Length: 224
Image (cartoon, rainbow, N blue to C red; front, top):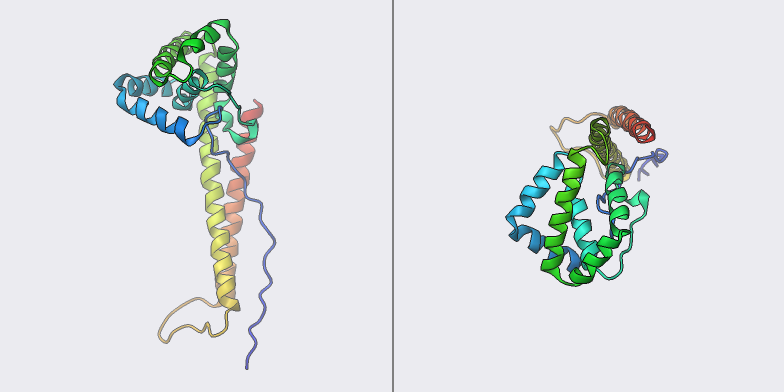
């Protein structure tokens, strides 16, 4: 009986991560369902979001956060490393908004009132758009920097996913090589295990390098 050769597993490869969140205020399923239903039924909301998305990244998440801030009793902020860096302007806007006396007065009328909170969120979001357009919050160069940062984040996410896929492919090949009775079928043309492993290693190295470059660009953009 032939004992299958134990394949030495390759060392773990660092895979960069990109936060999945673009909103800053923690919400539960009830909050999110209420927001989805309200925003879906309001044509003005879709137009507002489309207009804002042309000015700053993740504007839809900002409007949602404004709604939650008006609607919810207690606000729990997500940690910075859980949210995309390209949403940093949204956090600054929200913090200044929530801390204002005018917002506190408005919230006294919208607390736990879904429709009132949605209407107030639309009004405040419209004011944000006007301030961005007039460059009172950020200038045009900074707007472009935010969109570039968003692009870098998306690129890094795709590169990391590509690297993860190659690593998973390599793991499947290694597991197949270790499995007894894994001979190839008659007439089936497959590369030799060593040749296949070499090709996968080349793919992994290319994907790893691409992910490293994307992460370096993102970090540089964030520092600037």
